[in-house]
Image (tube, rainbow, N blue to C red; front, side, top):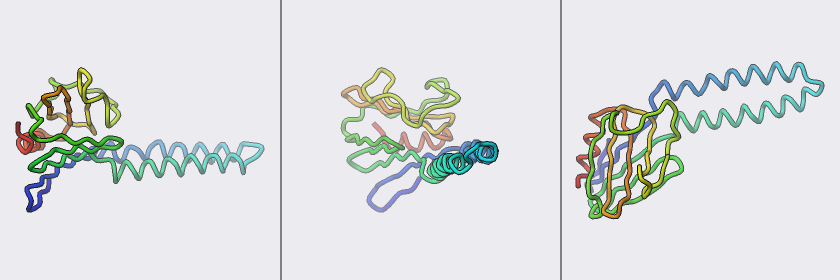
Length: 165
């Protein structure tokens, strides 16, 4: 969490370290597979070009995951901004009905989730997750619901209290 002089608080959620580094395992496996395939094909140049393209794509994906996969909640006196990979939304503070902390029993946990799932006005709302045992749920007067998963209960409490309701 960070804050600046104008009462803006920013809460950043990053993937756990083990999930960030586990992206390298498929990369190493694919590299070995491409080298083996290009040695056995009749046209090793085509195999190498195809393999190199796949490897470069995975390297770029791994770099993105290691450095830029982050969920941010920015709380200002007037609004709350949620940003995650492929998702941005802004709520006016006056539209927020509640901001509550949830434990793992209160929100769906699965082994592998996409960072952003659902829609704000859907029954379960939108869920922004990079993994963790705690979450906050923010609900508005018009029925939009946002669930953000945090790496610790303390981080979730800090965010929920900053948002208030």
